[in-house]
Length: 394
Figure (spheres, rainbow, N blue to C red):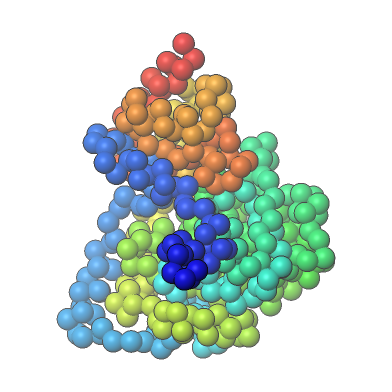
């Protein structure tokens, strides 16, 4: 009789019930029903997937290449991934034992955490950051430990802050640069210091490099490429951002054989394999998509320069990000909280951005604006935002 009185909620696992919903998606549920809204919120390229990639998909469908692939992914794509990572990041991976194709980089995070974390393990990660990392860590019953990054450091994570957070229970360090939401990147000396920290505390490192092709200035250095780091690093990447292939849901992970095999077990039972059609698209992207990436990156750089100048001109302090396609201006001068700023800007001037608090408590006082939208819309959005800011100060 007691069991019959349970509600559906009672059957939800407590650790899942405690997970927050995405702060990005929750905010944009409000946007969905609004007209005349210019969205600077969703991190999705406005470019169509290049035609030669789409054409390759059509050819694959017409040829009947619509069956299951190996759990690891097609041999052709894994060879190309290993070659790409070798030439682009200077890390040599064996395509047969150290590369796994996933359903987006989001699945790669999930299986990496589940394959390597045990209940009570602590994972250091930097905030502000993408909304998925901490919740996915919690689903393994491990403990995400946020480490604050600051505007004064251009949101680069500092080893001294990590040293204050590390404990005997710390098992891993999670890095995500170029960063979502700040657009921050790391310098070589930063990466070398982080590598030394990981080695000194015997930590596993997860590195999310999905935005690394969208690096505008400076050297692009993966921590996996540094001495002694490949064997303790899980390298995560995907096709959504740089190749404008969000709907294909295609990612990959590279790691030493034992780690790759552990992740493959979870992937094998949960997903079986990534879409065969998407894998054909990914193969074409890696073989013939460098020019597309350069063209999109050049366009983003122009938009970045425009939006940063516009925000600073209206009095919202904004550093020039070196990667990704986001800016993270400080809105404290308006006297509004991040959430109030975003909601009022949406309601009064039909411009959508994301409150900085969606990316961690230290995001208070900031909002995230994506410039993965057309220049004409960016100009209109900046005009509206400028008028909104002026009214708040008046």
